[in-house]
Amino acid sequence: MINSPRVCVQVQSVYIESQSTPDDERYVFAYTITIRNLGRTPVQLLKRYWLITNGNGRETEVQGEGVVGEQPHIEPGGEYQYTSGAVIETPMGTMQGHYEMIDAQGTAFRIAVPVFRLAVPILIH
Image 1 (tube, rainbow, N blue to C red):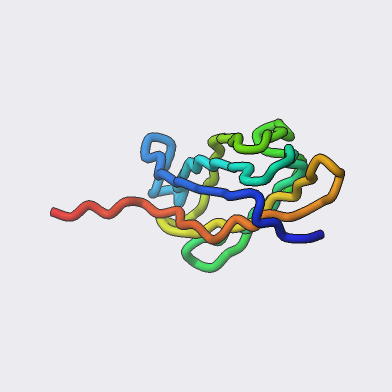
Image 2 (image 1 turned 60 degrees about the vertical axis):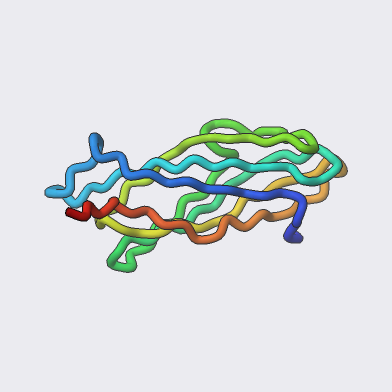
């Protein structure tokens, strides 16, 4: 499986205070991912892999078919965006992973999702 420069991934994460219970060591985060096809042929996302690390260094792996129940096709110049979530036991952690995809010729390739932070915003008075 090869890496491909044809696909760009952007991530935004946000703390969901209303669903979090810090007293129970439950911190809920939502992340929105935008996947852009910069190539000249359609691509399809088949699988995902995540490594979620909490602030204490405890790692959780998540993998499976597609994202949010879909295996989206992304046309050249197009993008696919979805929002999902993660729950960790600390107010700060990280996520990183990759997507396994195929192009129109059936060639498999992997797109890395660089490390992004899950963090409770700190209030400054």
